[in-house]
Image (cartoon, rainbow over all chains, first blue to last red; front, side, top):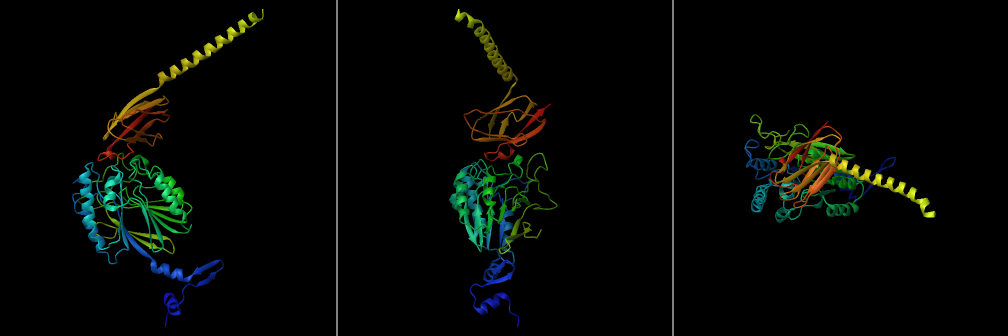
Length: 300
Length: 125
């Protein structure tokens, strides 16, 4: 009869056992088993820009988000949670219209099977009123939560129209990090990149380096963000930064064209450049495997 | 006479001092004359003028005013940026030392046309 480690622990009724696995290696078997059990995945959707109108760019502006929601619902296994990394709505200077768009967006995503859905603003949602309308719908623009051994930090680098996190929020971040172990698993969600990806196109956070400096002493930090409407991967030291595709229109690669403008719709490849991602968290190793999906749920 | 002995050196010193002061004032005046001043207005969602031509190594003053709300000016290629406040003139002084065309943009999110609020500074040899 084969008994696996988890079964053994269960049969033995062991609470917490430490084995010497090799020179200098102490392995808390219970913790290891727990970690394996607690590996999980979540889905990131970004830059849905609800309310955008531009048939040359997306003739299905009113249908793309709904298709993505349906595609997430069709995933064989449902994610532990869904995270929207900002620009839920497209900017409008009409305050009433802004609230209408936020309300419609919230109604559409309420169709997600997963009920653990988290939100953060982009500058289109919060840049003109310092997050006032966004907070009426989603309560707060920055917060933390813990999930199965990972500490998630949601940083707001858009409500301040100067593309900054701001000293108050940085002090809040510093306070949050102080209570964490240096080996803690940390995932940061932002809208804008924290690093200077391409400042010519405003693809940066003015005081982002201050947040990165605070995160640097921690050994396992990964940042997921949006804003640039395309997949992008970068490292600042040991911190990985992963940008997600958008769900309304793609933007060109940094410095690939003289002027930043939405990429036009390709009739031969509808929804090209749009999509969402599934992120598998291996908590024990502190690894995050990313799988990209198209709007209709096709694996890319 | 004791006092008479000092009159000539003091006179010479005064003349030197006067010449030095005049030189300084004159130098400043020359520098001011050489300084190029460009006035730029910002409003939703444009700068005027939006394409600016300047001379390499000629001191430049960019004078910004906003006609409506807070805007920004960021020209990463030249390493200069400033907030532009309504009802206030903001000055940026620098010496462009590299020839080329450098894009700039508004980096304070200002509304629907924010992403198109751009311009260029061309530094000519």
